Image (tube, rainbow, N blue to C red):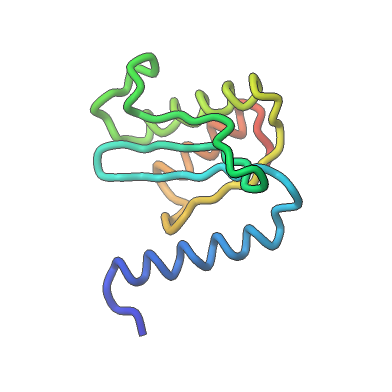
Length: 119
């Protein structure tokens, strides 16, 4: 039985990723990574092994450098939706990794949906 936080995180990440792979149907993956200081997201085409678009709270043009809160996550979500439109991607599947769909991850997902991404 996994008892440490890290073990539980790894189990959750693998469970989510395997479930999503079964339902992928050729769509790109919107992968989220959240650290204590930043949040980043990538739109990845797993069939070709290529990153289509990415956004991060480290980018100066988003105006949230050094912040890791719900507002920063929402701006990153809006930015990835805009960049996905430029890359002509409208549908993807949301890979939250081992992170719970709550708070910053949820704000990022909702902002991406409002920006036009479907998942």
